[in-house]
Image (tube, rainbow, N blue to C red):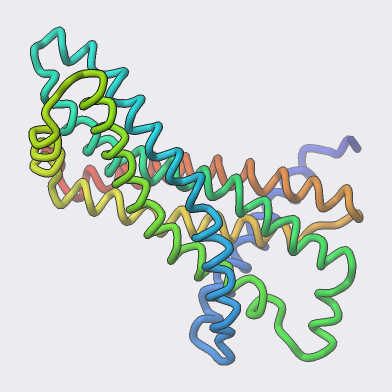
Length: 260
């Protein structure tokens, strides 16, 4: 690794942030001018949404089951084991569902976007598109951003539901709790603030995943090794930004919505 001065390092990081911000703004601005490339959006929605469904379902189910199993001992000490449904629903809808779904989709799709776009860059396919009069940002980036934001929203809802089913499975088979009581507590404990927080996060996470993956793909340099580096950096950066955004959004919404 080449050694550079702290000043040069800082300049490179600032430039990277500027380029990422520009790509993000362009990806949104392209939604308001023709052509719209609807077919590409549908194709990306299928690859990102339907392709990520198995891992999201498995993650949600086992997370809900583990959450119910791990908290049963603590709740049982206070004679409140029947409140497992309330704990699982609140935790999954407000926090675990959006974050874990975002991380799973980031690991699967941010790397895929970076490698696909990076390969197109190093093989000069992007330059060929520009030469033919096609805007690569509008043709390649905007459909991925739109599809990821749209599909992650629904993937999070599915993850929440499957997580509740996982908690029910453990509660029914291992803890011998009543299924009706579980669902009643799970439903009654949810309020507007919980649902709003749980559904606003995947919109932001989807935007982060798509823009980060596209940015590292479009800026890949150095042949196949550069594509490999871009893939790794995309997953790391997307995961860190998801966790940071989750912290900031949670703090902001808890202050604005005045949680009880």
